[in-house]
Length: 276
Picture 1: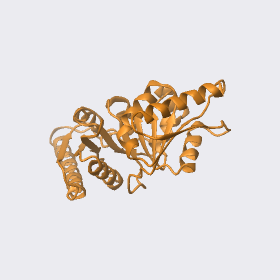
Picture 2 (picture 1 turned 90 degrees about the vertical axis):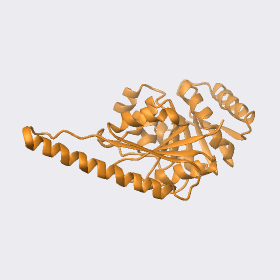
Picture 3 (picture 1 turned 180 degrees about the horizontal axis):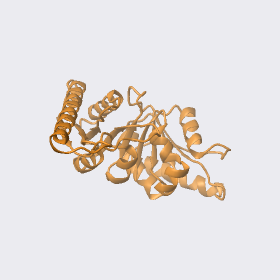
Picture 4 (picture 1 turned 90 degrees about the horizontal axis):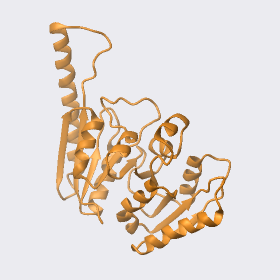
């Protein structure tokens, strides 16, 4: 397995430099094509108008959106000019998430920016929380402060769920290029430690059969949240990438109460590969 096509989702009114840098590096490492995508939709005003005034407002807003999307294309082409390989741009006047989800059919992996926990504008931004649930592809979330894809050490935040299994399989191309891979599981309160050790050992053995040397680790449960523990372990092993399954609990529960996925797509300082 490899990544033959890398897709990067750009957003209006958001920093795009980090995701462009990481997507370009990913395409170079795997000699992959790179596809840039962006879309935005006219947001109706909160007040009502009609006739000529309404049409003038619509025309002005659509012209502004087209100009912004054109600027994103210029930024994308400038960032990929020296990358080599096939470069493609796709854009539309559409809801960003809907457009990116449709275009993801041609990609092996989708690169997106992270976002703050604050309300996001669905007319201008494809939220990574939506993308990870619906793309059917692994999502690589790149924080704005990251300036390169550091694969010297990778942390697999293991939980014995279908989502985590898919995430590790989806991450195989990057895991093969990593110098160190750590598989860590944080036991639940009622978990038997020997069972947890057997699970992470099994994953390490499976990776070994795919040419990846990994260290299995059972983390001592503490008083921190699971998200804080994942971040702390990533710091301990110097991870430049965290691999995890998305929404091990229900998405509604995570959005309301918070959880590991919610944290990883909004606040983590590390690149995160998520699969659902």
